[in-house]
Length: 166
Image (cartoon, rainbow, N blue to C red; front, top):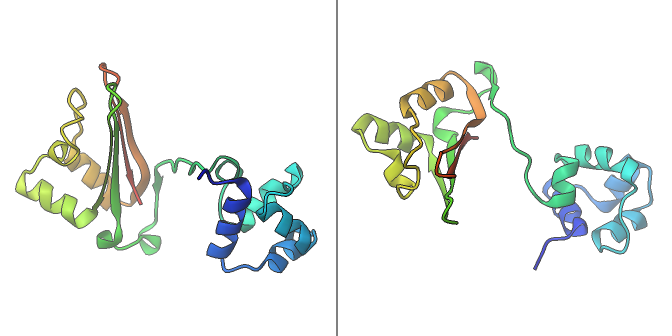
């Protein structure tokens, strides 16, 4: 079943631990209006979407489409960083043949693979041929505090590889 705008609003509200009354009060609407949004009987006014998205900790685009916004690579100060062993590496490969590979790997495992000389391409099903990625460089970026979308490459064969860290 396809997720609707109302379902996304309700889900995000619950994730934030908010009641419909809380959302209504902060946005200056009635709790009945919020209930109607969540039950897909009506939609929020377009001018309320930015405030609603901010309140729910998301973006307007994610509310409307359900697609998570891309997180550009950012530098995080050492005092604000997650511990290295809490980070996850996400590899997404979309081949020109229509194959899609999604791999989520804890960073300590990536470090161990690099230290042992294991090819990360093996982990992603070998679908990255034609795309050369320097994993030691990726690791250096991450260890220095860079997170988000680190790499997006399209090979001459039309294969796309995306590497993100959160």
